[in-house]
Length: 217
Image (cartoon, one colour):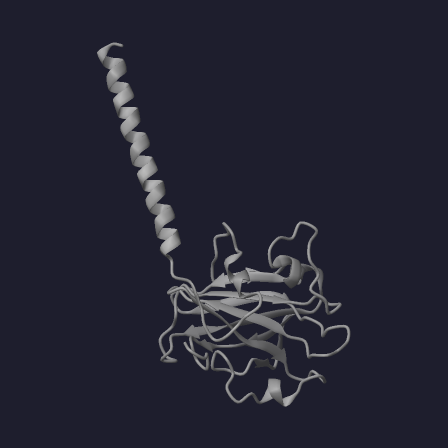
């Protein structure tokens, strides 16, 4: 083997070692990420991690938005635990029923998408703590056991994740004091929206406070 070939072989070997070391460190860092469920048991909260390789931003549009006349926009600001400082890079996962009141899943659904249906999405707050979701107004379950609602789950940059009180809609005949006047709403605010008409949208606002009324936070 000539000198040039030996040199090329040596460089190639060093590069492979460097890439292997980098991959090992990346895997190690991923394993060391300290995700922690707080606030008590939560069936399905793991779905907050199922955004895969999507590049999350502060706005998301759920699948049925362009297929219905009942379009709604929900926006708000998520604050740090002091209730004043905007919280950046917080992931908010939402899901809800379709206009038939069921969590309709796609045939190709995986993970919690089989249970939560296709009307689900993820947003990540911007530097101002803002988020916006475009979707459709969900319907109550077919048995009308509960008022229509949208589920909220939070994943903080520090790895803590937990469920929040759901969003409900003012005027729903199925509402109870549990939804309209909760003692300690998770997330610090009652998720009862009075939607206002803006063009072809019905708009509501819900701000949130990280950790507020979350047990063992």
